[in-house]
Image (cartoon, rainbow over all chains, first blue to last red; front, side, top):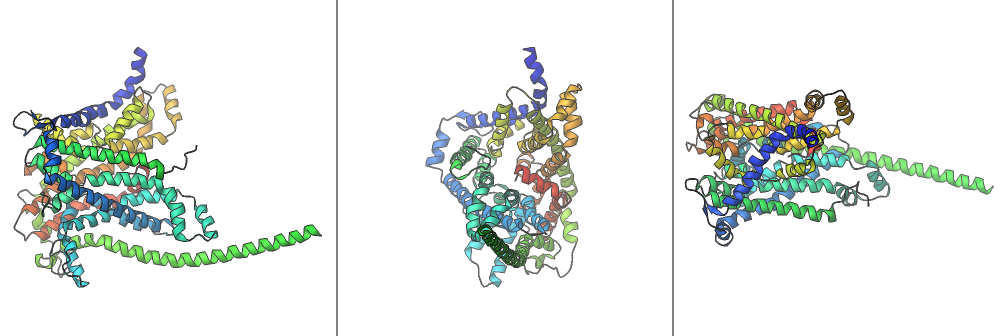
Length: 294
Length: 305
């Protein structure tokens, strides 16, 4: 027993801050929010147990919940692939034979660092406003007041694409790992570029693509600040920017429906968990790791 | 005779092969040179599109109000600095207050992240203990949990403790390693350091803390630097947590202050809003320029956002 302590004590001393944090800031709150999701709670009165009412209401009668799901899923389904395709395309351009890669890399990465800031959300709000710059530029090309430009969702998709820098860097690292002689052999065999891409690049990059896809999707589900700023914190106009997190925030901190908001939070957690699980379980069919031998 | 004929055949074949290879190489070189020029043209084009919004923001911050939305040209007809001087004091509190607040929150958070995350990472990467892989798996799972799920119970708890409208809800979690990303980043780095160092030190009678302090940390400055820069930028830009926990304008951080410009309906303050937006980005851009290499390497090795 004493030896057990002597062996483990130093490690647990180092682990202590994280352990406290894990129980008080992660596990505890997750369980608490599960409990709250079965209650009605306004932060003034004690939580009142209502069983499954919150969930039943959410799935059967809450139109805004479905609207929020719709907005968020559409965003994830469009913005994530757009960002990843952009990232992979530019990474492939940068990968081969350019000496000034460092400068481009810096320029393309900078938006990823700035993109989360309120300053950029404010900027985007103005760029894509009805009297904004983008509309004016389009007008000079003869495209007058097309509704998709001033549709606030368009601006968010473009904001998402603008921040392709970090998946690009991860793709670049992955591309560096593909042996050059594979391409040389393919070149000598006269394999066309497109087939080199589908037969060499894509399969060997699959683990990196998978990694980026999971990371970016989880990230996209959590989109908050930009949607919050561009929609004035409400999800307006006509709930078209009612991102799931914006809805959750308003239920919790504007209307103080803490029980209902907790139920919303748990549904989000389950959605992300299911997505991640599906990605991992299907990955064995399309992701092959090179060092896997069997 | 027969052998020399095959030899000759072979020689001709080798010669032929060399010629084909040379021709292929020439063709490839030529194609690559043309391709390179095209690539540069394309990449420069993309760069311009990418940077245009930032330049537009910068230009607008110097423009007189009526010029901001009137024209597409980036160059202001006259440079005006009053957007900056007036914007700095346009809100009920001066931006000096907001910058000091942001600096306090950011500074403390970075310290908290570095200390607590390197502690946990050291335990995970270098120490043997019962339950290590279990806790490591738990830690990795916390990476996936959206902040919104823990937000409400945390808020209730901090409210009960009387911490709302103080910086404690923003800073204390960082001293408890709540940003598990950095643990992961540091674990990846610590694992690469040669184990012999720890073992030799252990034989010399060094305690685990001594090993952490005198061997692991000094060798891990790149990882610590990367974590410091990322946590600085993320905390500086953090919006949701300050939005929830800070209600008094005296304690607002810079992002919250910027949002106030949007609430003011006196529509004529765009120039000031843009000027203050530019200023809020300046620290991030400076850090990016100074530590670009570290940032790029940090992402490539850890896959952070």
